[in-house]
Image (cartoon, rainbow, N blue to C red; front, side):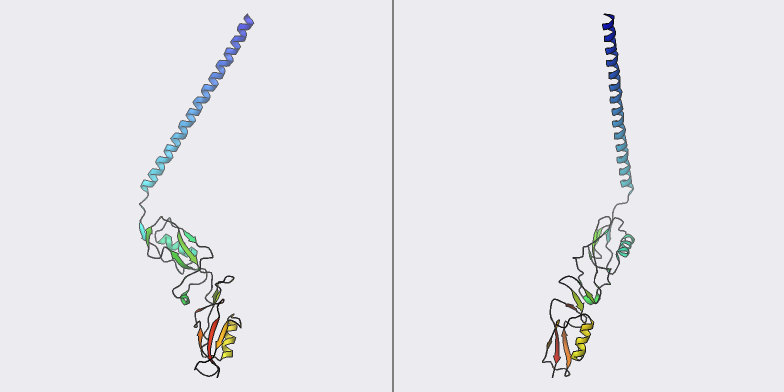
Length: 213
């Protein structure tokens, strides 16, 4: 009987100990939860205070980025107050577009941008899309169906000299059709298509108007 009582006492003692351990564990979880909530609340308050202290975003005119390198354009944005704006460099398939391609920017410079210079927008809005010129003034579009070379001045040259100059500029012997019937000096080139300074697309035939008489 004493053994049974003793046994029962041991069981009771173990049961009470387990209860106390469980109770402490639950209290710790509750303390941790309250601590995490307090930390999150403190961060929210701090964020709101920072937002309240930050000056409101302003509308500013976008600076002209054409003719600038990527680094120069980013510096121009900062100088114009666009602290949150970034540049998005468009992929190679986006080619430069010009109203007059004889005034193209240098290789590695920005040729087009969106939004355009002078457009008003919030200083924190991003990004500003730009196209980088990958061609040189003399030639471009290598490896594509838009490959081109700049047309030299051949009007007034003897036909042989004109053809030699075209070859020197990288044009093949079959890229131009010689058309007779013009009235300039005999044996000279009277006109060219395209004209001097324009781009000659390599997938199309050019024209040399000459007087072969």
